[in-house]
Image (cartoon, rainbow, N blue to C red; front, top):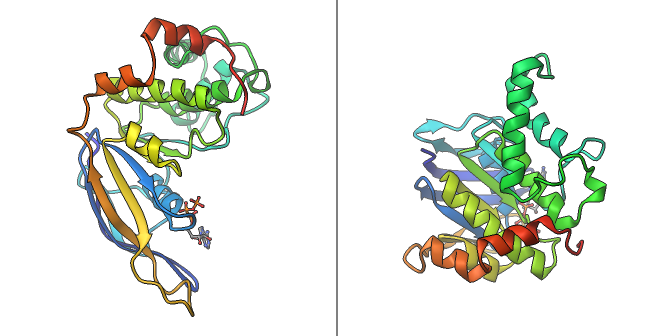
Length: 268
Ligand SMILES: Nc1ncnc2c1ncn2[C@@H]1O[C@H](COP(=O)(O)OP(=O)(O)OP(=O)(O)O)[C@@H](O)[C@H]1O
């Protein structure tokens, strides 16, 4: 379960309204693309879902309960720029996510718990196509591989909600196509609710079951911060194509894709 309900949400910074009166009801398992002009508040909205920012008015409910005002294991996040640690190997980067959550006070895991975390991390890395690169450091990976590592890092806590901020913005077209297939597969297997900010409308319509367009409906030319953005279009695409069809459309057979995922491809 990961039903997200947003009611009467406003976000204001001193001298600037960023978002005004946002109402939204997102059932569990929806894949939402957040689109809109630069600066209209998409990332701010994502940060509120993550718990990094608080609404100034209104609120967000997760499965009927107020969202905890700090990032938690129920929410994973992937940013455009790789958030991986350069001094840790691929495997260590993913285990670290589990250590932060599993041993908040001690930090490190030991013994059986460490071995269990390692096995889990290896499974997730295999799922994102990095199974043969466990001992490498991020600098030895292509842009696409680093972004897959960031996704694995987010997935180790089995989030119910995956938040993606322009996750593929820095990747070339071929790598993007691989990432689309990977993301759709993980989304359908893990039944997560996804919120993805993208500047690429085609990407939004390719991946999402629902496209949310943010924009200002009121503008004061003498005071650009006077009004905030709202959701101006809320397009449900669920009936368009089944997940399987969309998977097939984005890439060839899964075996071929696995092979390609294992191959370092062009960096961004
Ligand atoms: N911590 C902050 N303090 C003050 N203003 C902020 C803060 N964070 C964001 N803003 C402002 O809020 C507005 C929305 O920013 P946000 O990053 O959410 O937009 P966006 O739609 O994601 O933009 P882009 O598509 O360019 O990434 C911007 O005008 C930004 O300057």
